[in-house]
Length: 293
Image 1 (cartoon, rainbow, N blue to C red):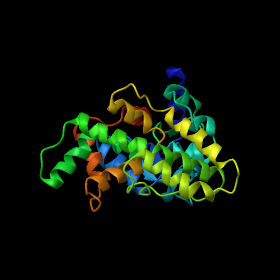
Image 2 (image 1 turned 45 degrees about the vertical axis):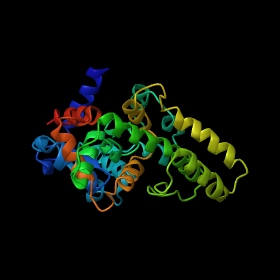
Image 3 (image 1 turned 90 degrees about the vertical axis):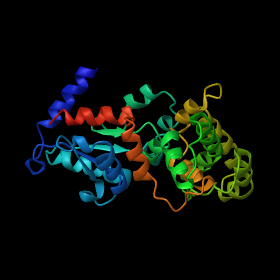
Image 4 (image 1 turned 120 degrees about the vertical axis):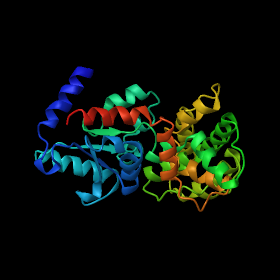
């Protein structure tokens, strides 16, 4: 299977447009994503691959912009690749993949074609939820010694648990064409129980269908399926980040640790790169694309 994939990448490279100077282009959802990938994680690969926000070519940004940009380039005879968040599969109502807990099975599906990498975690920011990087900047800001990582991962695990109901209700709102709740919605609630109570009391009624409560329970179970309660907090966090919203996890951490006025994404990305812990899932894709140059 690996040889087949490599042959496909090599075949695509033959169509590289001269306007790219032979350098493969990977389209990403936003300028923020381009900064993380191009300026922080893969700046040493920029002679081999280029990252561009979808809006530089397509009429829209975000996941649909990436899909459109790659499609338009391929139709024009130019090789192009893309990276989209996992939430894209929910945007396209591919619920089987939304709920798929096996990474190998998930990645094998390639719902948007061989040239578009669909991240295993919910969004790019989910890969910035790194206990060491977060605690490093939190401790620097507070001028204190960093906490042990096990303690930080336990905090992150608690945040992820509190966001299980948040992920579930947003799935229901999407399903019923309702506007979802924001990433900072749960910040003021200390625990999952508190978040769940708030949602049951004030949000379920927004759905005009009688089965909303039953659907909510079903989606809670789907999100919980990504958790491994018997595992260490670090592994639980990694599992849940495939389904809870990464931006919301960062929002809760910032709120709890009084870091609201700090622009964290670039700082976290650089710290992760400095530690040599760029996510292997993304690095493998970029390396494969760069090899077509």
